[in-house]
Length: 369
Length: 74
Image 1 (tube, each protein chain N blue to C red):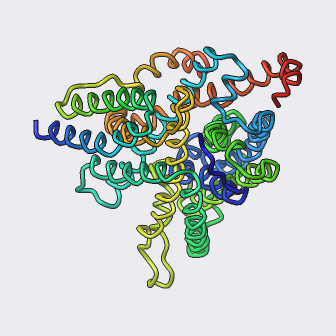
Image 2 (cartoon, one colour; image 1 turned 180 degrees about the horizontal axis):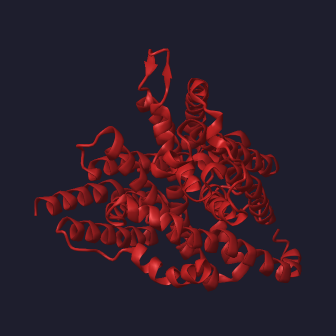
């Protein structure tokens, strides 16, 4: 169905932006809410454990180098059970696309364009979302290659500008919180950055030129993404302090507001908002791509493009109705969303490992893998 | 009322963009899936535009996972 393939560098870029995606916007506050000034430890721990999860994903992916996640499900579990699991997977992706659309809408309407109704920003965002997915994987992988340059130049600028505001006493006392709080908040981070990367199994390894190098890019991308989020978290705590970080919904935006170089370079946060919009957008595109491709493969369709506009409508409506306010969204993200992600992103792959171990001989006989 | 007319116009534009090429290539299954999803989407958006509450997956998920969450964090 899909002949286009991307190379391992483009995949690396996608993984980096995917892992940074939403975590950079809401991560620091969610981390600091539980583990206060030790949030950076939680971020680093979750980056480390994230690599283990990515290892699991690459392991599963390389068993069937030509199949996507949905097709793998059908091969491993048989037709109907496989389709059932794939439906859950697709549903998760659709839900997360809508949630991310809500994020972008609420971020824009709270901070940048407060008089615009959220429907307008969401429809505009959904239009470019549908456009990217219709043009295909290769096109948005290439645009991500351009975005990442902008992203990292802005990020480095942010780090340099803010470094004069650092107050080291904010981080003390180190390791004051007990290990349970740190573990809980690092679980949250782990889910957002690494476990949700299960959606990338729709691309890896089936739509990549060199699966072996792509495995490396998966690891490196996840590591870089985790480190960027950790750096932002550390800076938030250094500059804002743990209480202010936990209180704000978008602490990294508050961080950008603090930039003041010689009373000349200040109020550049709208520029820095480009960071979050880029990250959100690429993550949203990847979720949406997994949704459209997943539905097409569940129903054995020859192309997924015709599904993108109708799905776009659904995503917009969902994004407007899912949450009535930000508190509900935060409540959902820190409790229920974790279980859904763990169910699809960790339990299902582990089940796949289990089933593969049992049916290994059969696949070897068929020459499947 | 005005909103739902707008939604129907958008749906008509989408049909106009997609359906001819699907018909030309004789993709029957694609057409069926496309129509189902479009119907769901248009139905949901019209219901939303009239201010009716539409089934919210979040409530459903909360209903399923809340007991688990309570059991773990207690």
